[in-house]
Image 1: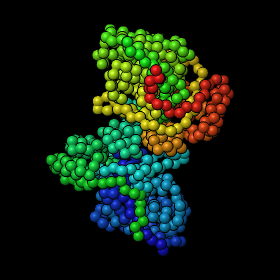
Image 2 (image 1 turned 60 degrees about the vertical axis):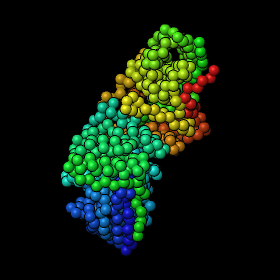
Image 3 (image 1 turned 120 degrees about the vertical axis):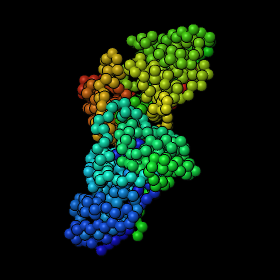
Image 4 (image 1 turned 90 degrees about the horizontal axis):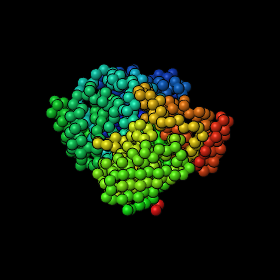
Length: 310
Length: 310
């Protein structure tokens, strides 16, 4: 029997115009994934959840279970796997909670079994785990949690390609305390328009180019301007109480850009400094309070990919 | 009377997924714009075209005339302007010929009249000149010719914003010798779909992120992968004889990416080295020849913005 404990960080997908292609790993929260592997085995996988945010997770239908089974079946490895996940990432908030757990188990098994799966393959397998929360595989959150920092995912021939870039930036994450509806991610994917006007495509592409250039070159004012999305966020924001109040409060307090984190309801603001981060935190919290909603607000920075901690 | 001569380089817009938001200035060709300004004057503008590619240009309806008049009317300057353009950029090939002339006159007047127009304003005015060739203003080519290198244009509040980044790359430009239909750019804009499937938007956005990251960080293999477009190029390529033959030939000869230059029919290939550039040049020329078309093929590098040369 071999074992290890792996830490996977929360993440924020899209950053506005980067729907399904961009995400950033964030040190705001993390899951710890303890894995015991016995070989040879019968591909029996057992998953347990612990910690503050474990309530209501069905282990059998979790991303961890799906991702572990996907990995064993793809690689043909006959192992028994026992997983204990300590959930430190709030669930259903748009902070990549399910993706982080999937990233943790995939990296753990890759590492402990010496599989030498490549970056893209890790992301593909962990992305399959996301079927559990979104109904379809998607790769943005898992790519960020797996490989850290700012990640870009794009279609390769075949499969997908992943790039991870270490960037410097400070963000303010606000998670409003709302009841998370069942299948939240799936529902929030269903509200996105299936077809998009060319004008919105062009507007989004201009912003995305500005966002990528701004983050990679450390021009955060430019990156903030590029965070405005014309396709997905307008469709989703209708379902997020007080989103525009929070946005206006953040921008007035000095945020460079503000958008939904993943499918929401959490929001993410890009800020130019620690001092402004505090101002923005206060302003967003106040805006939600004035709206009758309490919100957990944290300052976060880009985080590394999955780390082995024991 | 004050005068000066300004050189404006050719450009390639879009680079695949960057429709209307991205372009690169290229040292393959240039226009020289000689300007004489008399103040005070009556806003009389006179334009003459000279050189190899001046045949058939109607000065009164040219981008140069439109851009000059736009500038005088916006700034309220009462000057008489006399312009002589030596056209070195082939017209109607997708190489930003009309945009370069517009860029040249706008920079010349800004400079000679000491107007201190900002980057975005120069682009807005020169973009108005593009109505002459495209029926609508657009900014990608003029931004590249005005400010040089790789340029990104995105919507600001209000107006537009422009960024220019010096990048290192080698390109192969192939201009097939086809009769250019009247209003080519306008027609090639009309064939683009007005609405786009979300799946194609996501595919394009992933590629655009890869393209920007690749060019800015000098990862040319990544940039080449990002040059595949899912929206505009497939719609336009149907009207470009032998485009896919040329593409396959270029890729087989070692090109990293291959797409239409602007609205075509010229193509642009990104190559990893001077040696591969020669191989790709030969291969593309051969492919067109096998297709019964002669093509002018040149190796080009990113060029600076408008230069005063006299």
